Length: 153
Image (cartoon, rainbow, N blue to C red; front, side, top):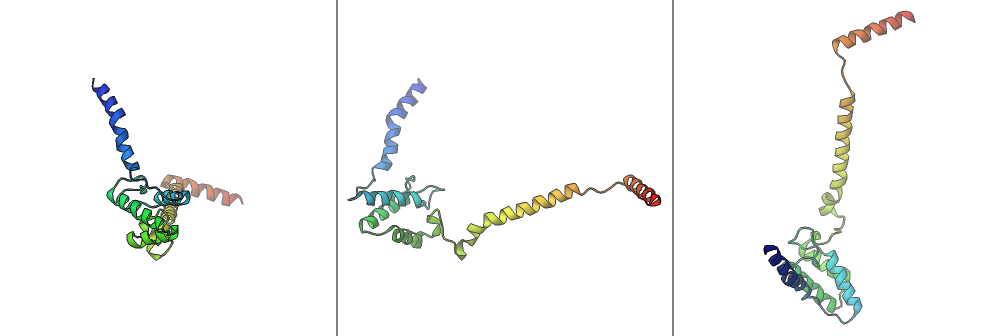
């Protein structure tokens, strides 16, 4: 009985939750503006969500950002102008592709530095495992072999 209830609930009520995100879909005068809107909401990151763009997010700030983009597209702004406006207001984090500048050097260079340090640690570990010291008995045997070889030559 519980399974039937869950199934019916899922079939009838969950689609309305997902359609709520479509209610704020704007209508534009041209298909170009609609394509511009879809492109921008896909490349702008939601500041309140973890790695979600504003197209996928239902956070109040994401809805506000979508509205700002709609208004700016309808005002005739370009993609660069809208992106610049949003980064000036919310910082470079709002885009998935932040520019390479002093404030983002750590973001861009940290993967390379971490890989370099990991390589150094791995090489150091590898050298330590291959460098094995001889026991006193093995040293004596080696010394004896060296002397025997020296005497023959």
